[in-house]
Length: 254
Ligand SMILES: *[C@@H]1O[C@H](CO)[C@@H](O)[C@H](O)[C@H]1NC(C)=O
Ligand SMILES: *[C@@H]1O[C@H](CO)[C@@H](O)[C@H](O)[C@H]1NC(C)=O
Ligand SMILES: *[C@@H]1O[C@H](CO)[C@@H](O)[C@H](O)[C@H]1NC(C)=O
Ligand SMILES: *[C@@H]1O[C@H](CO)[C@@H](O)[C@H](O)[C@H]1NC(C)=O
Ligand SMILES: *[C@@H]1O[C@H](CO)[C@@H](O)[C@H](O)[C@H]1NC(C)=O
Ligand SMILES: *[C@@H]1O[C@H](CO)[C@@H](O)[C@H](O)[C@H]1NC(C)=O
Image (tube, rainbow, N blue to C red; front, side):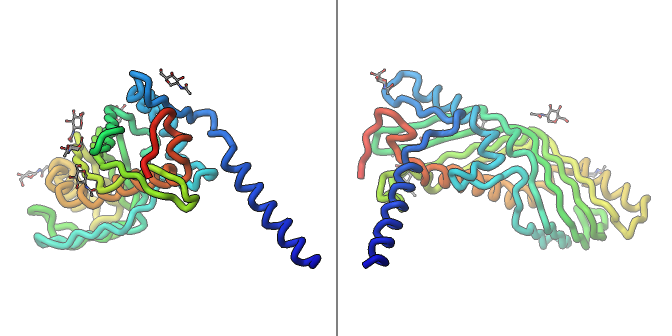
């Protein structure tokens, strides 16, 4: 009996804790926008601009992990006579990207979300290269530093309504599509040709002057992971906040 009482107490305490968490306010940089206001879209844009650096650094209360830097999967290029692998790859700079455009369509049958981000990103990795880039031989392994200047990523995604673990209604980005553009890229691969400076210089200069051909192979897997990371982060957050909490005056559907 005593045991049962203790259990009941414990369970009700847990409930109380959940209630408190549910009632707790957002951090001061998150203000819900009013859907019925004319400047709803502008409000969301300002809200994202303001909270982007916090999201990039991670928000433990909402299970949002830090994404600056973010670990990328290994990138392997194998074709056209070149074997190139990047491992232990980290991307730096997501926190510094600027929101250049945002469109949000809510309320109709076709709810969607489009955002454009622009800025500089850099990659650090261990590389292993063997073969030729275009016409020059390349061989070596060591530290790699890649800087991408003015990379622009446009993500457009369907917005759906899902029932969360809390049995309440949440928004979720689904089936994102994206386009990207990069203004320029520089490569620095340490220890090429076992440290033979002359050979290394020629190959690196060639790679840097012909960066766009190299990026044709390198950028798609990187940008894919950028988009995946951003969408996953937004969805993590959305899964923790119910629709009425994040958007004022918007009707739930489920
Ligand atoms: C939302 O905006 C509408 C129209 O501007 C207004 O009537 C309503 O009071 C606002 N709601 C809140 C919670 O601010
Ligand atoms: C995204 O929305 C469009 C337009 O409503 C629709 O045709 C498409 O099937 C949707 N995609 C998914 C995966 O729901
Ligand atoms: C749905 O919205 C997307 C993004 O705004 C648009 O590209 C698409 O054409 C729309 N589809 C329909 C069926 O309205
Ligand atoms: C990107 O890098 C360039 C060159 O270093 C610099 O001039 C520019 O200010 C950087 N842009 C941003 C948004 O930090
Ligand atoms: C991204 O969207 C912006 C604003 O709509 C547009 O100006 C730009 O051309 C787009 N870039 C790409 C790579 O699609
Ligand atoms: C870049 O590639 C072109 C064509 O493959 C080549 O003619 C040019 O010399 C390369 N640039 C450098 C700096 O090697």
